[in-house]
Length: 98
Image (tube, rainbow, N blue to C red; front, top):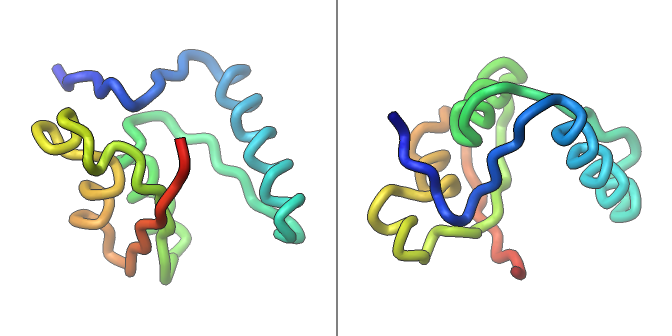
């Protein structure tokens, strides 16, 4: 059984996930992305990110640094660190605000 990270949010059900994606799309459009493509995927964040980057043959994966310096992140690993280790493309970890 995988340990739950205190810095992540478990999403149960498509409606909550779709709402989160809708908010993310609105932010992307506001920031100048013309036609963001949304992907809803089951699984852990790292599994989903790696699967999408592999399927899309991505050149770059950009993730926030949330959790990378937390105690949980240091003991169990963090999404950005795990994604950087597992991705077959370049990974950019950007500073995010709380």
